[in-house]
Length: 302
Length: 272
View 1 (cartoon, rainbow over the protein chains, first blue to last red):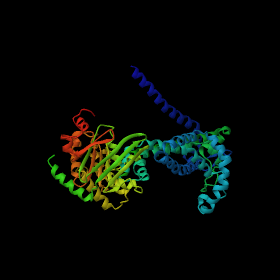
View 2 (view 1 turned 180 degrees about the vertical axis):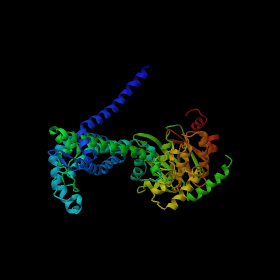
View 3 (view 1 turned 120 degrees about the vertical axis):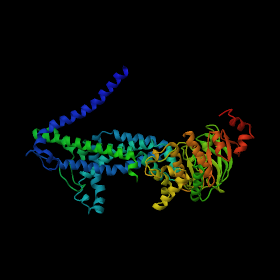
View 4 (view 1 turned 135 degrees about the vertical axis):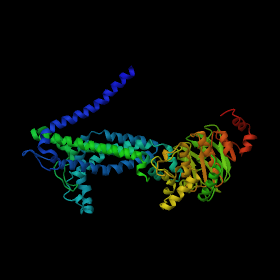
């Protein structure tokens, strides 16, 4: 009897999560309805953002969200995996604990603090120290065209990288620590070096967990608002150059929500719905990837 | 098993191609510690090539640690230390300048629980050591994989499903896959750390037969807490108690005429 009650209670709680998700989706759709009716799927392809004329399109925001997150992951994944491998495979126990603690601390800093630090430290550093050599060596690429203002896509990507790297480190370290010693010993007894053991035994075994860590980081990067808003420049445009200011979905919602009315408001909610869908897609992709990676033999010749 | 003899012959032939040299081992005053715990207290032991040498003793006596000193695996445990000399064909594997990675290429090891790489296929498991050593030639890989799977008496059971994951096999097959993986890099010595303790009796018997077959080509050291197993499989048996080698002799002598009182007590089941 007690068990049945307990089971029902837990089922209700689990069901509650689904209800909340569905309710959010419904509320977003209802709120965005005027904009959905007016712009339809063209909203995804249009670059217009004119509150006066009442013409809206989300493309620059989607672009800014995806590109800043991609830059962030491009920087954070190698760094995070490197640190995780060090902590899991190489660092002595007395070092692992304090470093792990600091990493977790890094994850707990409020994003507005990252944003302030971004404005006062990162933006000038990117403008004066990072950009000139990049421009001098790789300036022929469209990626590094135009004047380095400090604010813009590159800085947003950098600050996102710093914000998500603790997630990658913490989760990857955990999953690598969870790899059984017998797996390491199997490789070592074949004459593998520590690096070869990591590559051949540890990382494949922990692969699905590592992919999970990366997608957790990506989900955080896609939705991060405050810090990005403070350094991205907030200009709805699509530029190849990482030096150029950009805009993200969450940033435009945060910036304009208070003053928006009518279609403008509906367009912002529509943008929120788009972000919701983008995050959902990323998560589903992550699930599929993890399932594939977890199966393993799918990647092996038959 | 009607074709045991035939399989046995095949095993020997394939092992003979893989293994071109079997090393003798001479342990001299080997001590080992885990932090301050002194688990091996000066072991002297000669291990002859192309023989099965069993090491028996109650759990916690240091027999596995001794085994792991023979391929420098012991030192990989945080806080673990060792001293003394281990001569392989006369050369000390603990001499300064000796790379433990090179030592482990010469001394294969099979563990208590079968530990095939779960993300790799049967083929890739068997090829893992060669690939680590830099072998890329498909033909060489194919040939060595087949040979080592044959030498581990596993080929006939897996030849039609080499692409399946190594973990799809039964426990006994997984352990033979691990033996194949170790054989593929042509070791001079094969260390077996209670290789059958996680297996059922039939699979245990197959591993024991295999050890006997392989000993025609290869030096085998097997640690076991199972005295019947030691009696069945080995030519020479050493008895370790509390970190000391109490007695070593031919298996026949140890089990029928032990010289030391403690050996007698142990094999007659008075303790341990």
